[in-house]
Length: 178
Image (tube, rainbow, N blue to C red; front, top):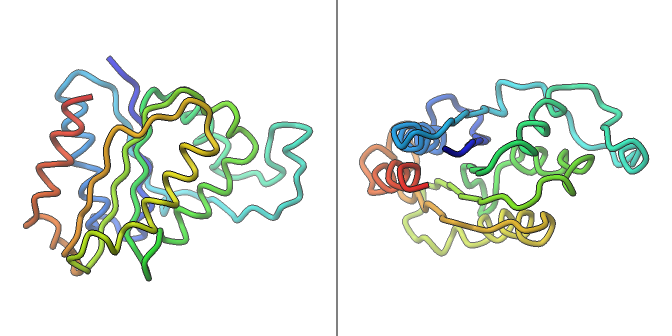
């Protein structure tokens, strides 16, 4: 049994990337794992202000919901990062979230990572910059991070479009196979 933490950065509840997160969680739970989805949009997470107080204390000077989420990241076995693609990169909510891991990023070690991205474009190569950013964070910044899978949810512009794509089954199956 693994502890799975799914971070959904979609600002739209039930949005396309958020829906893929639900499918991943469903598959993970059906395989006997413990899975939790956190919607960043439902949390109070401010921007990093580069004060670097965390270098001394390993705690952020900003007191918001990020402290509890960081604890969950440290405790997780598997972390899923999910974002809609806006103008060929991750959404602002995901970038803010990643920046706010600074106080404890050195403690997020030896984790398996999965990535989920959705976009209106049907050319999967248009997601390369998004996945490069997520991979840069995980593999270059987090000790022992291993990418285990990526879901390309292309062709999903309007709410619910993702339900008609192969990405739905892929998200469920990736969750089941952990």
